[in-house]
Image 1: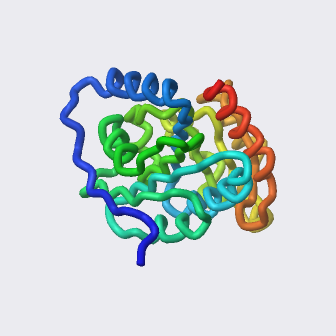
Image 2: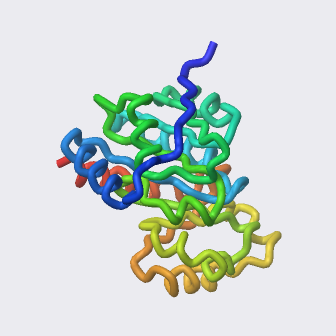
Length: 222
């Protein structure tokens, strides 16, 4: 038996997505709900990082998760085991969520009583960066095996993110990945980005990340 709902969300009919995103943020502010938009390529470690994040914060915050995917409910099954409130969003082939689609997901999740809702966006570095979901903050995960040049190849994604988590630091010795060069490339796109190297598998760097997120939630909900 599933401990979560599966919701088929529809493509937005609104032309002005930025306007809809702004309205959604205002509503979330009134309800004192912090929405985080979490993005990455497939295989970068979003779900594992998300599990570590929930485990690090669930004693302090009431957390809900919206798992967006073209199909399947694999990720929502994993997240539901953490005890967080979860919903699986199927995008019907769309490679991103916009503000109205996010609103549909929130209505299905019902965030009343939650402090933090995390949207695990569809896995790619192109489409999700192009649409404001209405989130308070954007975070992305770049994994070591992807290479340190990704900020140069996908500039929009890195330019819109408040936080960049560099994951899989435990395999750094096995890849031609220059951490300092990667940080330099990120700052070329976004000088204000917070950069946190982590290993979700080994739980390294997670506390620095959860401390930042916890403080952001507290500031938003005050």
